[in-house]
Image (cartoon, rainbow, N blue to C red; front, side):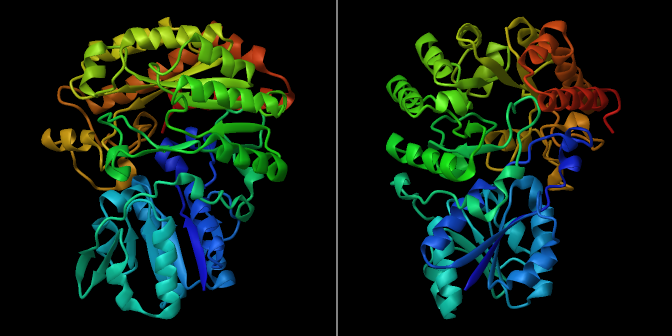
Length: 478
């Protein structure tokens, strides 16, 4: 029994625009590495093919490994790439079982099952589901398909949807990701976020308890928020340090600061191991989760960057997207983080429902008024499974020709925007996104901040590459 797990071709330049696509993130497929570890723990032979970094073609990888199952991860923008990978697998081995999983198969499994190349779509968390599928394929007992929770599949030209699988409550029972199956040293963050490659990612919690209208967490994980014990987290960090020797660590939680006590305990443990001197780390969190003590403790423990999802500088729009935080909290959090000595990054969204041109301009001005070091201005994108999708549908704004259109970086692509709120114009929003990002970074204070942080020729090269890419993406995006 062999299982090949596939991260399909991202077509990153098409998704993010030709300039940003050449300098963006190349992140390890952590979801597949969790699945691989679970399969290995059950004695199942597994390999990972990541089209981002693998020099082989998928056809060659299939020929070398000869899997009985091909499992493909699928985000919404990757539907076409997923189906193309499934077709290649079936053409190479007609008897192979093709399984897809990820966000899009969870919220819209039928999109993947209408053709002839995908056999099973896994909805939700797939660790135990994929093991059960592998056991079924190994024994040839296909009648067992009906008893596997959390899947949809075709039978007699009909799509069958089995009952959903409850989420695993004991997340400490998850195996650590099988990092040995991919070249971790190749993966990188974008130039503005990376200070020392190579990098690694560790998750301290899964899911999010909040319900912002632009996020699919509620649909994908049912609003579940599951927290690992700090003992378990540090067992993984210790293993990562010992076996991978990263120089930068990303704590991948949607909201790292769960509680003050837990965060301070994390910082104490990190320092007790001496990692604060050798392994700088960064987090993302909410503006209403932090205070000065927490931010100072993180900085002392080696955290170098905190990213806040601020979204808008207009209180009315924050209420519209049900962010649960306000403009004053955003300003306070940013200023406290700067006082603690952290690099402060924020994400903003332009083109939200009900947003006017004046609102967009107010958000841009707000970003420039705050003592931020970095920003990312995205365009509102109604991904399936979000309430923004339902809002866009009610406005009559959804015309799906290609799932790749669902890119929050639409201002840097030649395609028409997938979603344009009532009263706005596609070209106007695209120009606004480009201007917002460019005008923030190409200011003396921001550029001087990057220059002060340079510690090597490699870092100078990374920042210079990022600045040149942003300039080209703004002046000649297409």
